[in-house]
Image 1 (cartoon, helix red, strand yellow):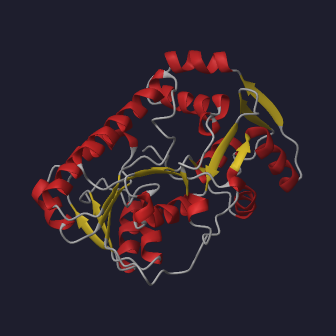
Image 2 (cartoon, rainbow, N blue to C red):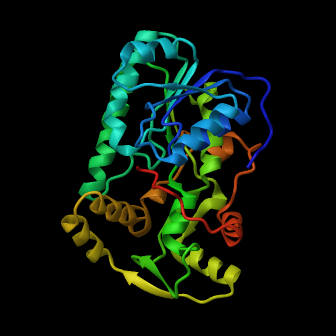
Length: 323
């Protein structure tokens, strides 16, 4: 992860969902690059987890301006937006449609130079998945079309998989066990990007004239890996051998049709990412923008390096990227 603070661009950045799974990393990256940083978060209540309250205090200690409010408070959002230059949404998947409130406020404010909506997964215009997951992607596609029609300067970020979460899900470094589940054949290639690197790339693209009204894909070559390669590397690092419990494609399709939500969505995601290999189903050409090519100065964390981190600190994430 790069630790160099940029001194040439001081855009004021507002993050929605800045206390969430990925949002907290986006806020941290914004601060590390020297941007005056604001977070719009729901008001704390007696039901707010202590960890979230602690995070809010940490953000304030970093100089982040924390504004508490609801997405339905149009005038309040407009007044906040008039104080900033760039808006990044890291809202969880269930709140994707609610970003219409952010779009309306951006239009009313009239001063925002770039909007990065909450995507951070596959390229929704180049991916077709099982129905439970496809329903989530369709919501994001609808938001893309709305933003394009609005005339707001935007960048759509396709960050692929949050590596820490999926490595925990696949390898269970926090909970050693003799066998590991392999989805499909284990040969499909996917892209696992460290959450902190995703955040740094996102701050970069939000300030880059080259990425205005474009899609940017985060596909660093060191993070393209199959399940079988991941397991083999983990076996070498741990000195252990794991039995592979195969979960066949037809079983996953059936589960996607019978499990209740959100479990059917997660099965559909695993099918898309690790069975079909949707994240690597298309080649990038000269018309595509890829983050590691755009910003070679960022020393991204490779999957191999991330496995070394997990050997020392095998902590399980507190929540999923979709929560």
